[in-house]
Length: 320
Length: 320
Image 1 (cartoon, rainbow over the protein chains, first blue to last red):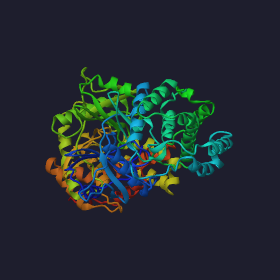
Image 2 (cartoon, each protein chain N blue to C red; image 1 turned 90 degrees about the vertical axis):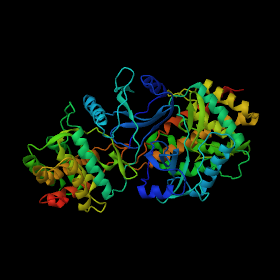
Image 3 (cartoon, rainbow over the protein chains, first blue to last red; image 1 turned 120 degrees about the vertical axis):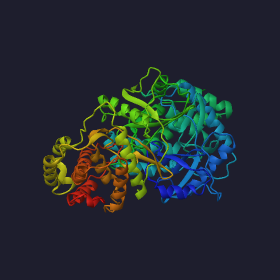
């Protein structure tokens, strides 16, 4: 939830002169998305989302993110499309920040996950993976295995304040993952942050994927691992194998999952759990007073990590 | 900025079954308004605002607020109109909170105040005061002079942490205001919180007034005093007499200001400055860690109070 940057009337008007969007009729900050400032912009021509990229997004990554949305939308994936101004550019400065206008996507993200949501998600994720195949740009996943140790080291001195013994446990897990992480698996463009609030549904059909600001090139199965964590645990912490099975089955009807990928899934799920545990831990320990965003609970991902540590094979996710 | 209450899919659907609004196509939290949870709701029939009233609003006051919006809209004042369900009710429960759907109002609130904004505001405020004349309900202003001492006493022990000597200075001001506060001035329904973010403009015309959740029955001139503070000071703290003159002149072309009201204006402006100083001070001193809302600076109103203390008559506001 965030609006970090207030846009003045004059700055908004000057920005919009680059576009052919008619007259502004409404401009409201949206209380969603923790990384950037998002505004719902309505004009006499339609509805749009304006995003100002705050400091957590590296400006040099923006051509990858915006190019990817353009690329995917051109291949039938329902996702926001960056609007180009009269100069042909989609990206320009607003209030000293890189900013963009994208198309508005109808739909609601599911507050309570139903099994059918997981099924539609699996299908859409596989379609996205295939559609990204011929995307020309490349971006390393800086929050995969090589990015975890610096995060861990920044958190380690205070980790035991959050839970007794956590620093040692994380250290052990990290060392194991660094050794065992797969060298090579089928890969390409992944979303890497497909949480429920980034997936819209309309009348039980998936209507769009948003927030591509962690997208990168990595193993396809890592995207599945993220979603096993984000979609298939119940609020009481129980893993819902039915949701996992529906997601994976729907996925592999579009893009087959190799045996090698299936075998790696428990390890990738541990890695993905550690990734969100570490970033949440870091945010919690470095939470400025008066911040607009409530830090999320890192220990939710501690319990998920423990679940995957006990998994012996893909059967635990509903597949053999 | 606030969304405090997450509305689940099922709760939203159940709520909307009371209305004839078609199918939901979008539902996004709005990062505006600090008292309540506001959502922009879009359906196949149009756009609406859904508000869930959080604990700071007393449920017993809601019939006054909603009835007033209905009343004013019926008399041509551009403000949100509560939608009635098939049962005839506008107010019902959602997620355990009183909740309402109101009409969506086009317009943008001015981030930078121009003199013309103040002029349009003066006119609209006077029209609202006249339109409220035959509104049947009554609500005391619990944040006027009798409400300030309890707030002061809650803040006094910690006030000097914010500024050395503040507790004594506030005590002295409060005692003066309690003695000198007018017994009787022309009055009726006032908005009592007409800050810039509650006033929408479209193409330099005032397009609507929103957020009637401090509305009450009080002196008309107190609404003017609130707006002198909220609209007529520059970011560098200087009072802009041109803005004040334009506002007051536009107001009195619609509703004449009596000599008695003019004379009381400096005192009412001091009172209004103290009111926002005290509520901001209270919020700052009682700011929960991890709160979604950044506390506003109480000392902004300390400087405004000091300005009005030095005023000797309405000439300082551009009128004689």
